[in-house]
Length: 236
Image 1 (cartoon, rainbow, N blue to C red):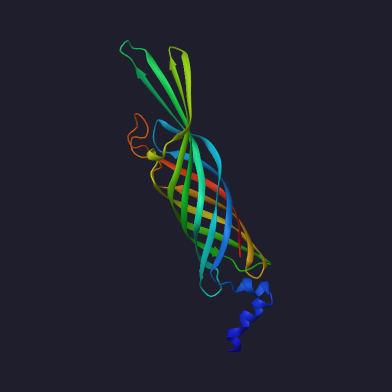
Image 2: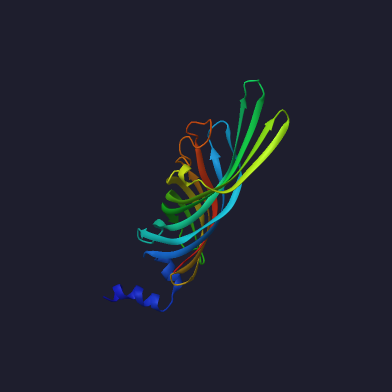
């Protein structure tokens, strides 16, 4: 009976070092992560044209297994804002043989509700620090998609530019996305179960961002939403 009660007594008296070494309980925390996102294209005639700064925030949850809590199933629920820039160049000729070139540029702003499903591998405590690597998948449901568009039309050396802002393109974006998650970082234990976390995570999409026929002249273009984020969080 004394052996069973001893860990709880130690926790109550704030022995944070021992708590970190035997951390095998479910953990909850919050995360705020600024990110740098872009649109990756595998289709000829459609190119990535720049990055956007976004952010995500939400609840982190970890379910440890093993004897010392070094192996964890890490998940959570996040609101994620990503996007990117792309451009498409096309040309057309009229009946008189005059060629018109069109450069269509767009900046898309995407918002997802995301659920990561990852494995987190942690070292033992070194001082008050623990280091980790993370690998798995994330799944997301699109809840908003807006775009700013610019078209440059050039005919016989004369160019004309038209712009349009805040276009609702949700119907052109696939509702579901999934991707690969790779990351790493560190945790600093303050006291008991309270730890600060910082890390870098790369998310590589492997489901098509846009629906078929979303771009004129391109049949089912292959585009993916990628981003890299700085993960900052606190476990309680």
